Length: 452
Image (cartoon, helix red, strand yellow):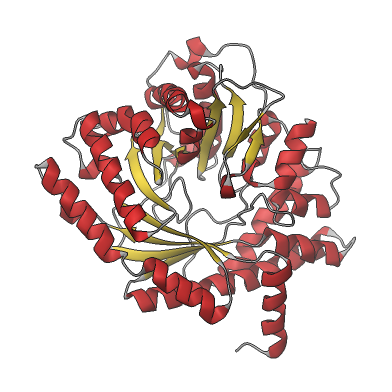
């Protein structure tokens, strides 16, 4: 039961502290669209998506008016396309990407995810051809997002796929060079990919999901930052309690929107993702949360410990507020989408090495990081391998969304626009890892994966 104080506090959080629902994402299974005729396959996919999600944007707008809670993004995720088009050539997959993009534009959603492949233990022909098609597919579409899962704790790391993805990222960057290589902002490489994630670019509709489902991603870094600032110089136990309490309130808002959206759309409610997702707007920064804990600048010594406390407290508070929690759930640290992260990177306090350390304790990984456009593909693969190994060894989801911005170098910045923001070009190591990446094969699963 909400009392007057709760209602007024929620209004204040929305008005003054950037509280919002970051995304309502409808997952749609495309298995019943499979056909050995490409034209028929495209027709069935377009029909299934536009029929299933025809009311998604309208319902979200109704909920915004009813509850006064902004819903920033309306999105769709689909079954990994490498399964649906398993017999297609790379050119055939590009045609499917155009179909997905057309459906997304028709419905008015911001992004559609699931142009994806899972290759943690090896590659079927459909996965090989889809991966080869990614650069062109992301260059000729606006709203299609792609992900490739190259590792799991159970399977280990497919280093052939890691090496390939460095090349794919470079090609994608060159094909979208006229837009600061923005195609790479729609491509993410995963370990332990979740199958119910509502956030892009990694959203997919897993093979164990219902035919359609509603998943919601909450936000609210500004709310948490304000609560920590108000708490003052309390000890860490009290600080964690403050974050837990505010995370509970934020997640209750997400639970309300998720259940109402599902009811109005006649679709099962899946999960609420607890992740704190920042934006480039002032007062909506995860870095600001960490600095309000007492750090002079995000990235300085103590940052990883502060992020660990934040991530744990968000999960503990949020999990009590929702019947079903999933996705990634924690704190995102996308450099280009967080004003505080951008400033720290520009000053040199926040480095690629520090970001990698921080990913050991947060939700995702190296996210929306711009690097020099002349960075070798093998170096990009090395960065991916380092990050993916953190996920595999720690049995958690990690990911890399990195952007080698063609024609730019350290000291310059890349402009992506909207929620994607802008990013300073960050330096990478100049020493080569080409021979290491060139070994190929698989890095075996860690010993603690042998649980059954």
